Image (cartoon, rainbow, N blue to C red; front, side, top):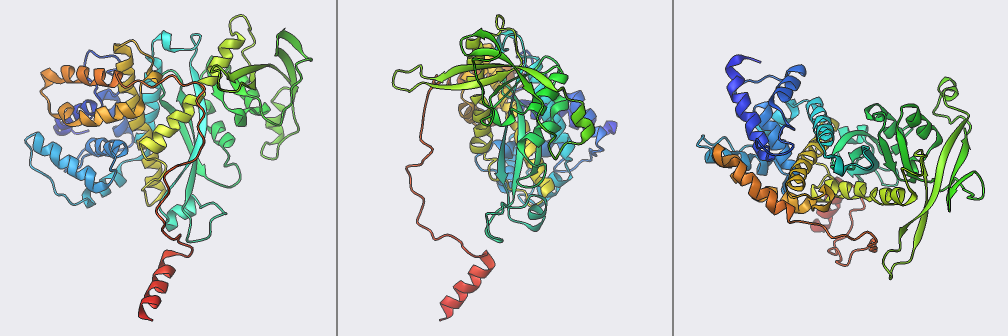
Length: 470
């Protein structure tokens, strides 16, 4: 990087740090270190030429889009103009073309690596009291997102086969690994919605290298596969999963630990089509699994009790009691809430990129912005002796949005004071303790009575023109 640009790069990093309340003296304040960002941009060959939209400004604007209720390019440029004016600089053009081209130049690897770095660094700095039995628990879950109906998107991420050509939208499937203690995205993988080796399990296998020996993987029953558990055991990773619905259990057999708690032997199933013979032979013929039946609801007198069976490789029943494992599995729901925060609160369920490259960048930008918001929530939790998952994500985002301009424009000497006030406001946005809440997945408000589009839009326009001419 040219030395002439060093000063402007430092100021751009500081501005982005302010955007996400990275003030000296606060916990987790070094999550976006200047050296790491500059080194990463140098590695991927990003040029720091003087222009209206240098790389770090584009990155900050992109993250702002992901956390804004209006994620349009026009709104992002308008915010940039307001920031420049507030800082005493000349306003840039309101045309969105330059910013759009600058986003296209931003490498996907930058967004992906910053997401992984922030997710893992925040988990590494988490206080011991936030961990489960001193272990890092990583929750796995998957979902989907749709995108604009363009030829490039349809080719890379085809629409579901149940939708007629011209009427559906391309769809991407993704799997994310979350840190249970702090809620951050540690890694993610994407693939088309349908096709060979495009399941959530296949995506999870791509992420195995990011797991560390001693970790605990927490997942629902879809991930409870013999070969996946065996692979994780080989890597020294423990699992806590709901038993797959096709696997039956008989608590009269095996080595009894307690009531509805025993050790059993699972035998290796036949080789699946997707696995080659050499890999198949690497897995053991038998594997010891601890199965236990636990209550996951029923604490409230008006809620009927429900039991499930958990499969785990945490064999020590004295250190990992049945009640502890039941409570841990209840926390798996945090992954669903994290996905809701991403898809509903941050509007990632409908992406805006018109090319597969921009779609992937947009997803990584959402993950990175989400991690940085989680960082601020962890700061508030640490300052006011709370658990991060007891703070409302939406409340935190709303507060950060309200404090956005003061954070960027206040004097350096007042930054810590402004951040402290913001953290106090965030800490007050607590979520209720509703472990057994049951709600029907239905909506009360009816949609507007518009007719559905049953033919491609171009064809519908021709029909409308014919009708108007008659």
